[in-house]
Image 1 (cartoon, helix red, strand yellow):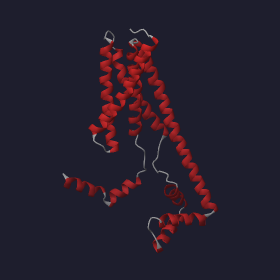
Image 2 (cartoon, helix red, strand yellow):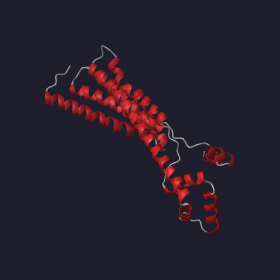
Image 3 (spheres, helix red, strand yellow):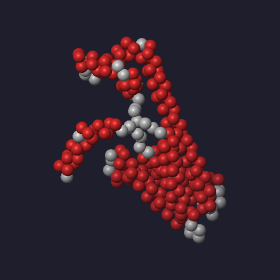
Image 4 (cartoon, one colour):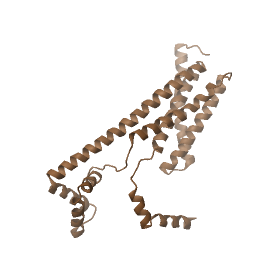
Length: 253
């Protein structure tokens, strides 16, 4: 198996493969936004369900509050994600304009910055001179080099619309699952809550397992970790609902 993996690794580093890979623009994966939206959506609705059951309120209350929070919070989260990425893009463009202005007004100073950046990387002599010459002869390359090397700006292309849509759809899709048992008429509330807890648990574990592929961690460990996190949030909601019912004497169903 190791030999096969080594062969695949070697093939993936063939000059033609590398050339094709570098031609592709670095685009942000929507998976991270979907994972974030899914976790938050499931936490939101199951927390509502837990709070309602803890307070002894009617199942219809869980449905009303659950779907209201699902849509409102999902939209709010998507908008927040959109604005965050958009603001970051605008900030990067502002930095790009600033670097362009500096290159036009103080080119020698900017060349010296390039020189010192690559000297700190271990280059010297004619090699360093050549690097400075090549980079400073291409204004676009010069600007992008300053952004990444001096300012630490990432090259990954982030689409705010795509991120917002992925967040919202995952939020609503996953967040709906804990509410499904309460759509079934004639079922006793404790059974509805148990079914909702099972569905929420499956969602939390599944999202954690999917997340493991992004962070390169064992699926079981990541799934259990996300399950415990979601379970803790739901337990707090249930406890708050129960305490408030006892303190204020809220009549149960």
